[in-house]
Structure formats: C-alpha cells, structure tokens
Image 1 (cartoon, rainbow, N blue to C red):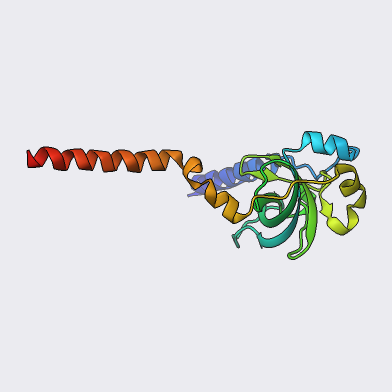
Image 2 (cartoon, rainbow, N blue to C red; image 1 turned 30 degrees about the vertical axis):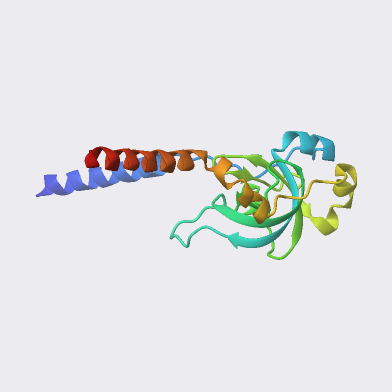
Length: 185
C-alpha cells in the first residue's frame, strides 16, 4: 500500500516537472520595417486598387482564437493600378494589429496594396494600405488607374473563362447524339 502511494507521488512529481520544464512556443509581435515609397509598394504588390469595403467576414466564433485568424474583406473596386481589373475583390488580413492585421471599416474607401498569399490577396499594416481620404500622396503618384470590369463585361467573357466546362458539355452532347444514332441502326 505504501509502495503504491509512493509510485503515485513520484509519477505526479515527474508529470509536474515535465509540464513545468516544457518550453512554450515562441511568438512574435508585428514589426514593420521602414515604410516603402509609393513606387516601391506598387512594384512589390500583386494588386493595387481603390475599393469600398462592402463586407467584412471575421473568423468563426471558436473557443480558441488567434490574433492571426484571417478576416475576409470584400471590396467594390472603383480604380485599379495593378492586378486583375475586377469589380469585386476579396482581400485577407489578420484579425488583430498584433499580428499585422489591418482594421477595415465597412462603407469606407481604401487604397489597397496586396500580395498573393495562400488564401488569395493579403494585406497588412506594414503595407501602404490606407483610407482613401488619407491617401492623397498615393493617388497623386499612382496617377489615373483603370476602371474595373463591370459584371456585364465579365459575363461577355463567360465562354472563354469556362472553356473546360463548355467543351465538356459539347463533348457530352456529341456522345449522346452518337449513342442515339447507333441504337436506331
């Protein structure tokens, strides 16, 4: 009986010492280098545009959340300097500025500088992204941008954009036609 109690105490002490000695994972706060010029930011970005934030979708309400969880911000684009000239763009950023996330507000226009990431376009507080009202220097240096493709313009390109689907449907129709002809013979 005494031996079993001693074994439990030793096991508990061993477990506690392992837990106490475990080194937590290192974390790093956001730290930005010197800000880039408008020209350098344009060159290093995959997309640069003016857009109105029309939808902000934060991370789910999970029990455990991180400041690095992504927030998806959908923009109604009005001007494009670099990237796909789409009428609507979704850009991802971290939830918190502690993880370099940029805080957007719905119905506010922004000049967005974004890079391609795992989930799509991404921006941070270290990029030149800012509210359009505070971006006079940027818009002056960027000059006149392109207008984005409107939804009607994008629809005209439906067949070329979905070539695989169209070819597959045509092939299936041809195959069906041939099968019906051969059964009648």
